[in-house]
Image 1 (cartoon, helix red, strand yellow):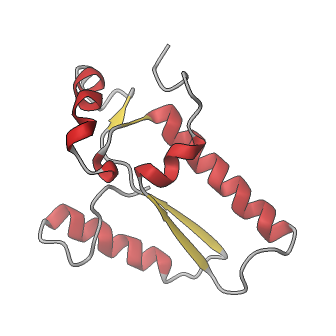
Image 2 (tube, one colour):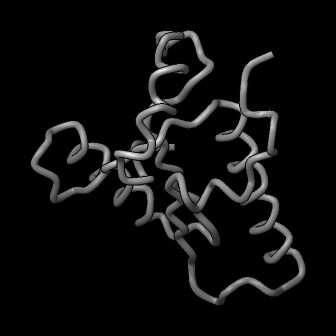
Length: 120
């Protein structure tokens, strides 16, 4: 898991460092590497609770890669994508070369469970 906007060529120092870290991990050449780039992660102790109300109201005005994501949705996407990759490898259906898949909000969204995004 890295962060939205990660890019070794980015002008912002944080995004640049995270992008460089992604490239370093990619160089290991795992059979499959899922790189998850969430923006604001909602429902955890490190994110102010008020953002859970404010961020979704702003989604219409932001590119999807900067949409907030609930921690449970992020976890579901990470597990589901990893299971798909593992199954492909186990069945011999994986690409012959190392595969790196970058998932931003839109690519993670199909793994969300409708109505289960919010914290109980």
